[in-house]
Image 1 (cartoon, helix red, strand yellow):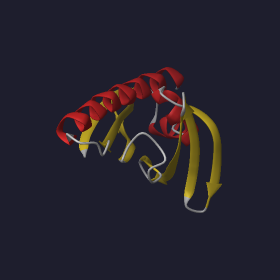
Image 2 (cartoon, helix red, strand yellow):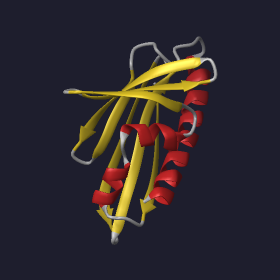
Image 3 (cartoon, helix red, strand yellow):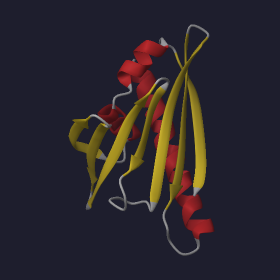
Image 4 (tube, helix red, strand yellow):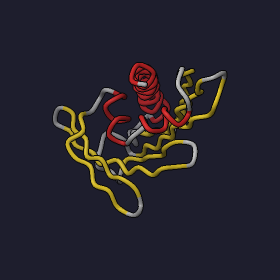
Length: 135
């Protein structure tokens, strides 16, 4: 698995940022998939997301400082993917950090996982930009 991390300052309070970081919003912010459904349970929220020819389910759990989610099993493009968004106060705003671990599970993992991490980094940057615009 490859790990990527992006961070951005958001000029809004941590409480406002955390209110905006809903499971459905995170998927939309990342921009690669469209939310087609969400189910709440005692364990968290499962979001069903689609892109051309591909459906995946993402299991979200709230954390004191943000969100954590992972792709459910092999129901998506990754062999494994888990991501956290954490929020902390900084200079009358918030520092939001997104970390993701990804693996495609393909031969030549050193190459294929590097490409997956590169794409994931772009999605996380897009998510933080969209979040900042939204709050």
